[in-house]
Image (cartoon, rainbow, N blue to C red; front, side, top):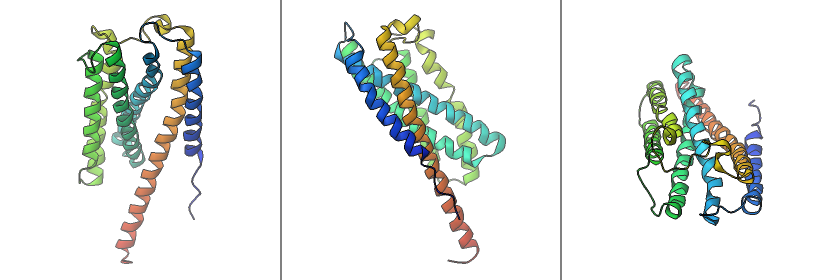
Length: 231
């Protein structure tokens, strides 16, 4: 008899959604308007959590890939898939919200700035990682190949984070100077948004990982029944 599924992923998702909804008061009522961008600057409080948790998702892919190669953990392999799916979604939304901000701030939807370019490369690499996972390969071989790619792909993640410091970039460096050049109310709002979205992110990763675990158990049970000649 299987154990009942934990409600914690759903609790995290609900808590994160409610917390981020509560952050809207901080965004629109507490944080002051930016002098030059005005209301458009408010998209920053969505853009930043998306970007940070996308990078953390790809770090989870890296750590899980190491576990796959060292221990052959299939559970870690499924965690990598879940984190990569969430990371690609969040990084894609990061690019979209960044383009909206750029249109108002720079007058163009896109420019080949080092931060933007490395982020776009990262998105393409991890999208390719998901395409590789969809190929019809033996499961063990696929997990090893994906683990190698998951480790190599992570090389671009620190470049995305450091690009605004390593090269001349017009992208704002939020963590550069003390306070990131923001008013204290802005900084507090940004931190709250990142933490609130982190709850939602954790629930999303956990829920997707559990779906993949149940799928693997179902496939194993079907193979066992076939092997026993039951159908």
